[in-house]
Image 1: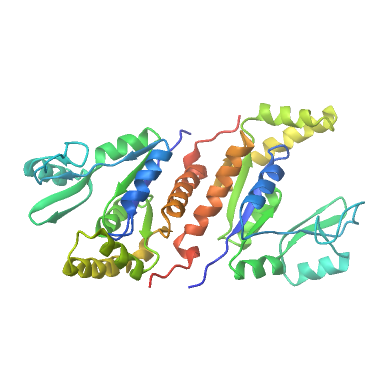
Image 2: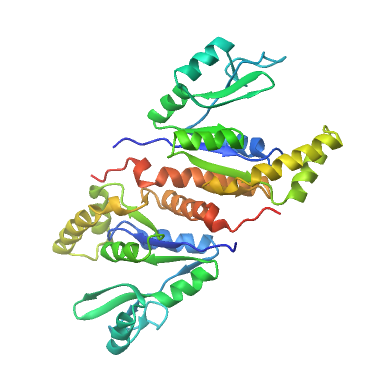
Amino acid sequence: MPKKGTLFVVTGPSGAGKGTVLKRVFSEMDGIYYSVSATTRAPREGETHGVEYLFITREEFLDLIKQDRLLEHAEYVGNFYGTPMDPVDAHLAAGEDVVLEIEIQGALNVKRKRPDAVLVFIAPPSYAELERRLRHRGTEDEATILRRTEAARRECANMDAFHYIVVNDTVDGAVHELKSIVTACRCRRENRGFVLE
Amino acid sequence: MPKKGTLFVVTGPSGAGKGTVLKRVFSEMDGIYYSVSATTRAPREGETHGVEYLFITREEFLDLIKQDRLLEHAEYVGNFYGTPMDPVDAHLAAGEDVVLEIEIQGALNVKRKRPDAVLVFIAPPSYAELERRLRHRGTEDEATILRRTEAARRECANMDAFHYIVVNDTVDGAVHELKSIVTACRCRRENRGFVLE
């Protein structure tokens, strides 16, 4: 009975603080593989193949779709984005946990393909606080902030499909909650691979 | 959508270290109620009603059985032991988590009555280590140690019915795991009672 890795799908609206929380969790826990998405868009200045994205051609992407080797994919402004299945499965088979940080529709698609995936929603404490955080970045204009707040409301309407809700009131609190969820999943009987001898 | 308490049933063979681990978890976490069992046996020197046990009469116990107000019960050497339902439900309704520390057959009975209970098995790292710990206590004679080791083997055969396995290799590690399980359960969407507004 070998140790079994868990597929975690982590989602949340822009401004909920997913990136900050995940970065801390990765630096404080071992045995987690962060899935890198594939895309057909061109790399931007400073982006490296295999770090921000796997930069592949449209033909390669369509091949992955045809062979059903993507956990989810979507098209934005003419470019494909998706999660290749093979690296995810390789790490799970090695007993590692895998984290996909993707948007909500993608998360729901993964849930259909992998019913044993654990879905975690990172929520802001309130819409008012979310808006405050989006404004605080200072890089967005008013129209963008309103559009993102509206998008967040739509995304949060799907919270019911998620197994766990992490409320990012303080980063420390949210990191503690997410780490606890990962640790607890490792203690599940079917994942633990423990045989008393 | 109010916050919902979880019923945790914590079990493990004698020598696995349940008591030590639970004591630490209670002292380090808020919002957990430790269920006190009822018994018909007479209090021993130094035992207080409501602390070690609720000491009740045989008539009162039989009444609880008749009214189906016990989560589980058993008879040992002529005395009844059981878990009264009312205090458990009162604390759950108040949004607190409740821990029952009971033996394995009782845990399986609670699971039948309360399918949403979370069952945690505290396991020693190995049978050899369990035997070493039982010997180390120094209070048991050889026959008792062998009887307990055998009982542990029988009890551990039921590990498959439990949701979580905490391996008590070090007390710190086991405390961390059990606290993570409790924290993760509080983050479950259906328990969290979180509404984004």
